[in-house]
Length: 448
Image (cartoon, rainbow, N blue to C red):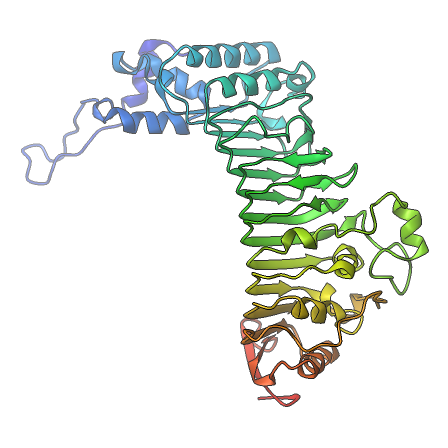
């Protein structure tokens, strides 16, 4: 901790110029103008500082002595200079203890650690469960926003941490190994937003009765199919989902869903050459066995109440294709964006979606993967011999780098099933200029 006289020097360079018409236009004022700011402004500034810097402000002046104790935000971060874990642990323990004894509420608590921030092995904090203790202390402060972040690609295990917080509204986890206890939010009735990045989901179930927004980026489900039970969910984003595709239960309030399945999925056809497309070949059955409750829809049924959906999967990841055997009716779906996976096996997946989306208004297809990287797929389902159910479909957009055989095949299928070609727009990358698109309008099976 710096000495009081040293801390005052932090303000020596902060002076205000007088106006041009002043008697001493080039003079500087020596007044402490920062301390004269409203308390709410000072609290906001202190909330943006790392906790060790916020605490140091107590030596600046008499008014600053206790300001840090009533700041609405706490930011616990590592910094070079903590030469052993015990000193750092003692500081954080004392910090949270003093805040718990203060009447001012804590709106947010953010703990962000990286290996390069310490002069010691920061994994010692996990081995002795210090971080778990700090989270429990933060929960006792009735925080509304809780953030826990570790160095990217270094999973940090939090064993047996069941959150019980009546005021928690938003939770952010990064590089955390999350088990069943931490993903059971039955004790957090006000939680509405959960964001997870680079996390390992080692849980049988993710449950919350109140959660409205779920965003998971580059998360892996290595152990099994995690059951996602979020009856109040409105917005879902699973970007680059690895491992076992989670089982999504009914989400009656869902409005928007963005889902992409990565190549290193456990639901990937391991057969060489022609892939099965739905996990039915012997190679896939050997890969993940027969204990998969294979007669039920894994993911698409949970999206059946959504209004706006985007689905993408690396070619060979078969969950979406497999689910089409039990394809639900998307009664509220208005906009649908699909990537390459849907145009394999004679566009049957695309046709199946259209036949089960009676309210669909806009369809977008993104076809950016080069044709040579697409393996042939054997579809195990057949579309109904019916025209499309939707009479609301007015716009079909096909975004591609070139108008090739795949695009012609899609146009033929759409035309066969009753989509007027004048409703179709093609955006082709303008390779000659290197940027932008060339917009093409279909007339027959030619382009203008």
